[in-house]
Image 1 (cartoon, one colour):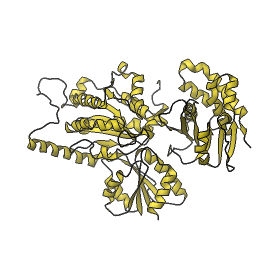
Image 2: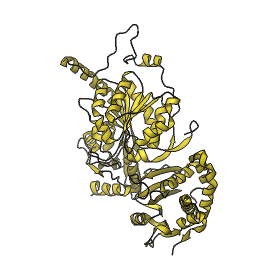
Image 3: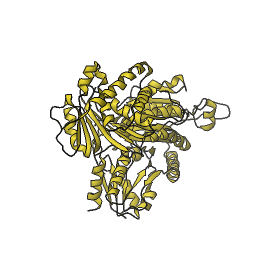
Length: 181
Length: 363
């Protein structure tokens, strides 16, 4: 198993922390992982992306030319990364941020209305975990149990009461992701 | 961060440097923030080692101050380090030359970014020349280690100190924004206590540890106005450098046995080149990878030996062609040596390396 993922959107959407949670969940399952952010002067509102690799084998390059899966959370990221999904790969996008949907026909395209779902849940911060749930529905790279373990490990103890909310958000994402035809 | 001994954790290369410094019994860190290495100082400030091991952590007023604090600390036989990124390391060059001239052990970490000048905060390997050919003035050398993973960022801290003290010579970890910023699995080295004053006196009889009975004053200086004496000192330095060249060359070879082409790359670029090598092999191209781990001393002999079976060598660097000069010296015209690199903070991707391999060596 080897999954090469790009997660791209605006700064402040939780792109980097979603990637970190995914990488840490891989670690909980004794997998090889790497997390490579495109770091820059950007903060909230700027573009942010992170390459996450989860693999059974030792990872060579943390920097990739093409991806198995692209998680696209705004229009500029779609324009940048749609062409970099491997043929037969997966592109999932949040409907809220995208005005011109992807057009490729040689990849599988999924839509997740995570921004809307987060608003319904009354918790904008659940957004990235809803997206992660969508990914895990398509590709069970790691189990939900491992994600919960990872959150327990990475969140400071004073935030541990938020873990059930995160778990709920992941399940929500699994429920609402749908193929975009 | 609470971890148990030997636990596998996920962290950035910069964070690994900070944790490893505390764990290997460092006595002091002096630095000034600069992207992309600020997490070194941030992690140290968060870990508060002054409350546990007694290690000093100080944000100096500038890089010039930092390196001179390192100079002072090193003169007393302490394990001291600083870290910065390219423009900051340029500011330190005078101090580094003085430390090399005074033959003091210390560690300088450079998490390279693109230049010249203030340049960019994105990754680069364009400080190769500065690190291995001098940088500061005078005939001196740094022991330069190039980590290619977060694990090596952690492991090379203690190794650098060991080498620095063994040869009384400054050592450098030459990393870049990729390895500094990426998170990977790492097992932090076990805790080693800081040396006691008695241990320092015993291990570093040259150090300024205060007057003691039975010895004259220890004088730490790089100044010697008598040219005959200064030449003698230089000759002694050169003898030391020859010894380091003989003993301390480190490199890694991957899939070289049956290779017809060789990629040479260090640090983050070696990781990218390894993926390119795997992809090229799937296309039936027999290519191997040689990764210098010490950039000085450089693995000239290993490259010359490996070159015998090769049709060509490609040096892949995130710069305009620096290490390629040392590879050409190593093979002395026996095989074609080409360079591929991206500049100014752009990091090459594996596909570009495969294309360069075909275009430059297989045309």
